[in-house]
Length: 480
Length: 146
Image (cartoon, rainbow over all chains, first blue to last red; front, side, top):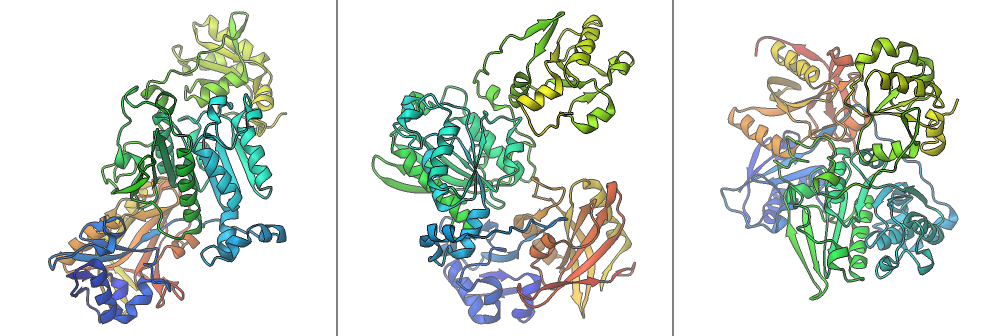
């Protein structure tokens, strides 16, 4: 078969651009190549004999890493192999992690440190790693415990639920006395007790199209422990958009699945299933049940994959879907290919921002609470505004303070100072829901009454203004 | 030295203006002879780093294989790559260096402050292995004769 040699490596093949080699498989052909041109070896392989991470080998049009039989794939004379070093870069440098381990940490992680595949370097990578767990439930319980035990330095958890007695059959991070308590607080307590050297970041919110990118951007990877399709698609899309891997797992009755999606070269969940199923077609665990031990099995596989990705060692489940049947105790795997037409990660993606999947999949949003009314103007509490923004409702936020105040602190509202509002009223849409705020709620009440008289019917006043927002929602917004 | 025609030179700069504020990328095809990378044609490539295209680029290997196949049919080689730095200088970054693996090839960078192409520089990746590779400044000569 023919092997196409890239320009930089031709100096080792006697300037030949194409080398013809014998062999029955890809491995044979590559072995014949390096036998004929031994200098190539150190450019293609690491000291351990693995292909260097930046070297791609394509069999005709397929990456050999994702072929079902990998380099054991049989070849014909008419086939060709292309060696393609990666081409990438960018304007700014990657941050350098300065991580050290204390003597207590060295003692704690000693069984890792004496393994050459982890060692000091790997343990520091684990400490520097930032892993986001979606859900502290069935899958989240075992995987968060093992990630914490392994010394993953920053573990974020997103969950808005409280512990219910029906969770305890499988969600082993929670105890009986935690019933009624927030899952985040319960999980944090167990994880910190297990390993006080790590940081737990709690996101007590429903993951939504409005907050996903913002939460994901500070993490190196996401481990998805969700139990529903809207969130699974949201997690996948947000991982693709933020460029971080999605360590996927799912469970149903006796069956589980695991894979690693949304890596730079590998497929994403949408390469496999481009669109969610219609609402109601696929039963959830709450409806269909789940064997309590199954999330333990699948969650630990996810934790294993997360740790391998952090260490950069082994063969992650990229391009492979692991199917687990606990009843027959059989593990099978499906080989997946990156779909170049994938709506999320293809060459011409149509999904450029997270979609509001709650509506898409037919899950009703929570009902609204009535607001107090002052002079005919509904008063919206900061928490309510936050909830609406998080739910992706995108209310129009109008800031009626002065420009200098806006510079000190703002929540991204459209700035029209109260004094100029009558002249600039045409910038606003009478049909749109408008939430008005100032510093503490006085000027915005005047503005709301002015708009109300001018025919705006969907006007709310943010009770307590940006000061209350800072106190109740986002303390990072300065008070002045 | 890197030689390139005025039209190709202008085309890679225009590409960077088009994709601003995102990084553009593409492949330089031609011949390498006596220490000169002679550009005969350029091929645009898609930037697959849609997650942070403002300061990262990546060319899909599938696209590169296609470009390489077409180049072979025209008896051309890959002699380099180009990309843009939106609102950053036309200098290689640590990321550019870490991700550069085509020793002997030219890496051409155009600075696009506020959407307008200014400086275009070329850097030759020299050395023999990943361990001793380095970028050196490379003269760009714009010439009409091919």
